[in-house]
Length: 204
Image 1 (tube, rainbow, N blue to C red):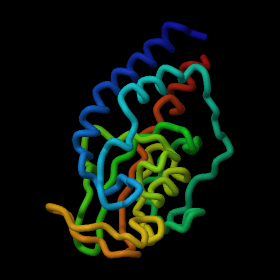
Image 2: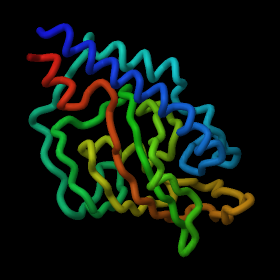
Image 3: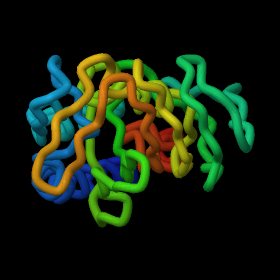
Image 4: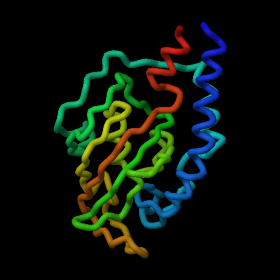
């Protein structure tokens, strides 16, 4: 193992997460992708803290599962949970995110003709821990089937979006009625600590 190379790689990852977390949470303070219990009061507090993100990066040398057998997604399909998707960018990683993984995403959410969430072009992604319930169920469902670097168009049914409660209107954001189907463009930007290039370096 080349310890120097490994430490340099981890240093870059940690620095990236330190720069990313503050900007990402600031941009998502009122984001509708976040899913608190009521689905009406939105906050970035459900996401992953900077300390957690850095802890995940520093723990990379301890747990490194690698799913070499994961198949590439079809151009169009339906996830196991029932989210319809169309592949815009296929991605290139064989690894698929698992519950407990820290993941980084960018997205744009739309209800009918109105965009209500948009960090798709942001420099920094949003980090959250898969399985924490911090985001809409449909987003978590799709993320688990996407390779890193993939960008999908999603059609999320109401039971995997805002459910029977819907979501009230807020400044710049429309009311979303109970059971409404919503659309997202979702990009899986990274799975910190589990990307193929970092694993290859550590394994040298």
